[in-house]
Length: 330
Image (tube, rainbow, N blue to C red; front, side, top):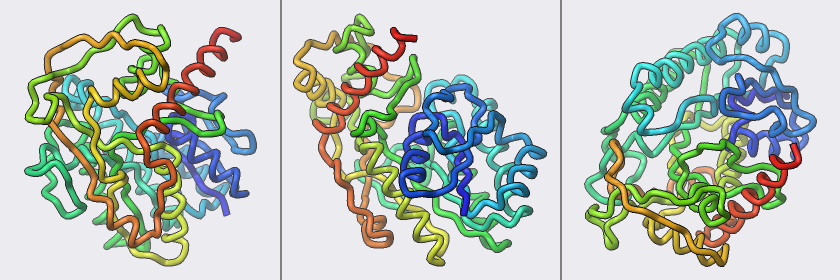
């Protein structure tokens, strides 16, 4: 059986490819390398440089490999960018996902795992959301992902096609073995930015808003270690292979940390100061977003192993140090 991983040269996708290869799966990665890196793809996986919007390429790959499943990571993920360029996000995240879904259905690929987002919830009435909470995204990024969820839902009703949509909360950290991590130079992920600042790769970082209705005035998020997220994907793949029904699950720990708490954790782990400067709120940022994460544990048997902010930060710092040395060597 062969698995197609779209966006498999990117941050989360590269971790998925590592895990699949570690488990002896045959893996094909489709990535246009706009934000990913060819060196991030695990040895043993086949990398095809191309775009998920290329219908002919998709048809060719599916016919050639007869994929058992598709795990779909490819897409744009920066909330402020989506506010500035909504049509670009709808095209990249929604229109191209439709092309991929259609190719899977026509090619007989009946299992699909989708990288969705907690941004589909918008600004919840309470800080914690569950899968049947109101879906009211407040930015085009969240809307573009929700539209794809709708397409998957409707396609699964009409065709022999089952999917799992995993709504990510804030993914962070790096492979504990040091093989992969967040490598995009100008990434906006808080833990990466704070780690780069602590290590002197940035002279300062920004705290976007200190006037939210939270205990310390900064945004609260549920940070999940990337390896635990990948474990959820593997559990989802096993669930679909065992005949499980189409489902939607939150991927988070159910615990929130503020921006200032994250910065303090980076200071503690690195032993260095972090120059954090105040800035206005960013468009599209909810005050608090924390996962209600019971359903995925019950349905898939998911059991996280890295549920600790300090551990997440330590692996992120270790990766930043390794990435710096790699870039200098290059």
